[in-house]
Amino acid sequence: MNARPLAWSLLCAASLATSAPAQSAPPGPAKPPIRGITVSTHGSGRDWGTAAIDRCFDDLAAVHANWVCIHPYARIHRSGRVTWDTFTSDAPPAYLTRPIAEAHRRGLKVFVKPHLAYWGSPFRWRGEITFDDATRWNRFFTHYRQWIVAVAAACSKADGFAVGTELDKTAVHTAQWRAIIRAVREVTRAPLTYAANWSDYQRIGFWDALDIIGVQAYFPLADRRDAPDELLRAGWRRVMEEVRTFAVRQRRNVVFTELGYTNSFRAAIEPWASHSDGRDAEPFQRRLMAVALRAIEDEPRVEGAFLWKWFPPPRSTGRDFRIATPEMQRTIAEVWRHPASPRPAAGATHRGATDRGATDRGR
Image 1 (spheres, rainbow, N blue to C red):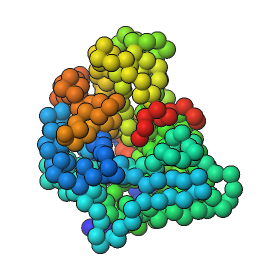
Image 2 (cartoon, rainbow, N blue to C red):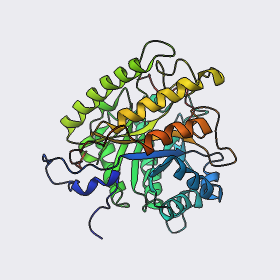
Image 3 (cartoon, rainbow, N blue to C red):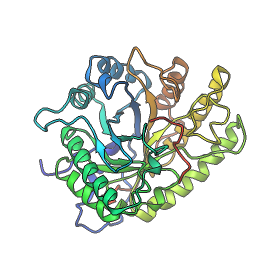
């Protein structure tokens, strides 16, 4: 098959070849957004490669998800080395292949968003990864390219793939990233994105080489604890105006590659922080999620979001950013089952396309 498969919310039929110039296109018919769940794991992907993933995907039907996301890991070192459990392309590990097969068997699409594990390194989170000499930079890009291409090849049947996640201080090396994107395209037909932190997505210089703009959507929404819904909605209107303006300028749509809230009364101020105020704050956590999902459903330039995070049973809730609790499941299902209004038609998606952020998310 020569055509790239339809993927991002079934909108990528309008994607252009890399060499073709971007063009304006009339809005298409209204289509359902990406309603995605990130399925996390313990033990370097162990959960994804077992029967636990089967039951997990069955459970996602109850919240009306239509996409799932997995996030395989490699490890970053001070020296610029990137290390991982190596595998061959003809025998990829079950933790990469089984989620794709089981999701497809259930009619779900799969987004693969690889992460660099920074634990034990001098970096407090991925957004701090940078190096102070050419040797380390060269080592980093050599190793990173080997790893990301290996994962893309193993996950070639996925429906979407991120070439990087929150590595925004490395993005100034645009030529190296363009080379990585070209190499990934050689091993997968999946539409590609890069998952930029909310504070840095407008600084990325290679959106034109990708199919869609990816944003880790931990946008601050209000400056007060336990903010009322009207302030949360106003915050999202401000965010969506900014995102929409940038998307139009780039001639691409946007996907929120990650979105979540912990049970904290400060979650609208610092959505990335994992502080918890216990069960007393869970109603606020659910209000935050409901307002966010409504805002996404109503914005045609944002194709959808991947919610963070859900663990396969028996670890189905996790420690923070929990969306597998019965109460949160009801909140998500209510929005995804009964959108407030029909989704507006989106313009065609075109191919080609700080320190503030995730420091506390432990991802």
